[in-house]
Length: 104
Picture (spheres, one colour):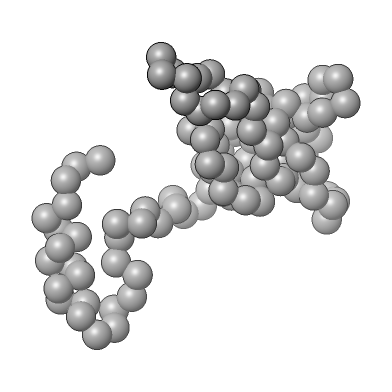
């Protein structure tokens, strides 16, 4: 297993309005003990195929590592911005508002 970060590339398909305005997105990854598998080290902005902490398979194509499939999700799902951050002051209000949120 290497401590060196590598760039992993995700192909993006724009929607009917042309969003996102890019055809590819890159994220940092670290090689795992299994050849060709990487742990994603930062949060992608556009791709929905994988996220921070996921283990993915990538193959080298034309001098870059391209995403092929997600092997397993991270151990704990990422916290959504709508979830309460702490149990500190105002926790009752935060919890009540969180319970009323619209379904995602």
